[in-house]
Length: 210
Image 1 (cartoon, helix red, strand yellow):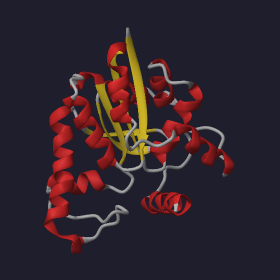
Image 2: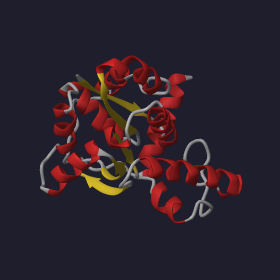
Image 3: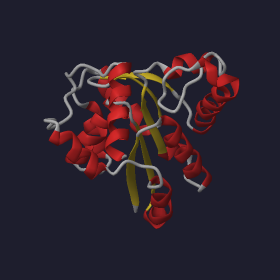
Image 4: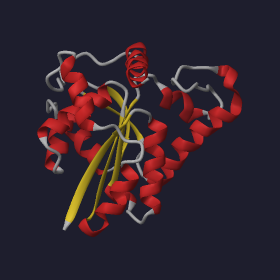
């Protein structure tokens, strides 16, 4: 029996590390998918040159942090590119540009190309995610997050879940926070978040966690 697990991460670097560990735990690359918000345009600036720009912990551009930090981000991107074939840019309605690879990303991309509203929601629910959680995952990506989805034999579930959970968002708590602000569900027709809105969202989460 095959099971599918999805987890949301606030930062791409954390998600990329999880992908590396899951692959190292024996899950084939073809059973791993990643979808990361690129509203801050971090992928295009780093893909061309690992030293073209660097970022601080808040993901704001900060050339003063030097080439070492830039190389680290570039290595993370390169590492995932080496694990997951087809890492690249697609656009998802309601989210905007994302960096994506893997089977779930391909399903969402085909749906988006065909003009199917909520293609990501459909891809997630077809993989076994509840509709309620699927909406929170999609909204989480919209607000700057990264989604990792993994298929595996049921016998591997416990050990892979332990890897996925290490730095993942608590999806129930995050959904509660969204709903308290008036959000009800992911809207593929909603405007995409700007880079400033994504940074403000992260700042708000940091303050709430303090």
